[in-house]
Image (cartoon, protein in one colour):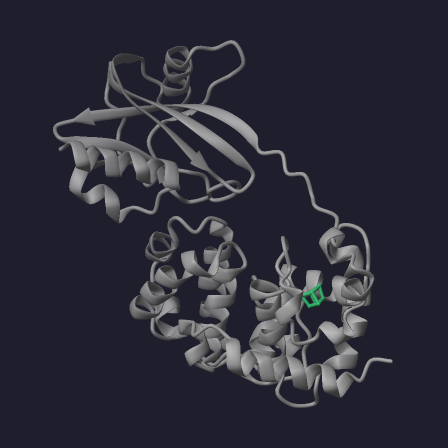
Length: 351
Ligand code: SF4
């Protein structure tokens, strides 16, 4: 029979001795914890550290986010992906400043009404910043509990009722800022998705998967098939400036700036695709001058192969809110998807 108090005591003691010293763990500021948790939802700790440090330097408080333009927010998010999350941070910061006197609300109901505050983010802010007894489930916690309970199958949300029931039993009355972080840290450092290090696990005496020696097959691994897309991109220059366009405000990579171009259709050559895309997007005809580069970039759901060409066009499109001629040195000020940002880097390197 599991002793729930003993479980949380052992886990939290281990965390206090072994936890990594990460920049967002040096604060209880709910604003900074919110930002770090959103960033951590999409990439690794190592990748988040420079983004987080840059962000809190640029926007030390929620008021700085509310006062900033969306373009500046997106620029500081560039490369992290999931740009809708950055837009939600901007929207929520404005609501927090207009309705909550620039203070992050301490109530789950009030947080729930803010854009981007799903169950995980709410739980993280409430427990880590305000020490509320709120369970949180991320991929690490779900995997750890599935193993502790020897729950077989895929690690998906269908397991979350069981996970929540377990967490509710083992969570202490106080110290949830430590408890929740300890569960996630255990998953990251010890109960890893591949090759858990059970020999050093502080809660192995509670673990059913370990007892049955089935921890390696829990959860069932997912097969991930990454879609491949081929894209033709036009670098169009005029008087030392480059033509870029802003993507629509909804959908994939919304509101980011990029070079003209688009997907290569089946049976189409990159050159034909580029001429068609330029005609459709700009209403002008393109002549390809030279092949500039090929780049590959991994996005979350697909891998994009970018075929980049230097082009001339037969008439100049007028600048507008979503179309600009920009000098090479100024291109880096614009928030761009990683593929376009790589092209800019390459152009700057060749200058
Ligand atoms: Fe995970 Fe192994 Fe610890 Fe069980 S004993 S929780 S499988 S690390």
